[in-house]
Amino acid sequence: MTTVVMPQQQRNGGPVLVHVEFEVFGGVQGVHFAKYCKEMCDRFDLKGWTKPSAYGTIVGVIQGEKAYVDEMRSWM
Image (cartoon, rainbow, N blue to C red; front, side, top):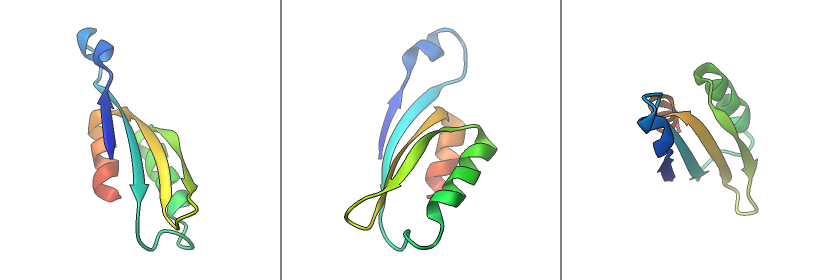
């Protein structure tokens, strides 16, 4: 996973926002991974996308407050 901190948010005293690009390997296709991922993102008010790759993995991007993105990373 790649994490990028958006420093302007830190300077303004707002929440620390991050952007994470990810790829999930293993048995993720055919088990509604994208559906559950969306439910988790909705719960934490995160934005992003997922899509199946040609290699049988799921790739995507998540953006939002660092604490919530860290929760998503743990879940994945």
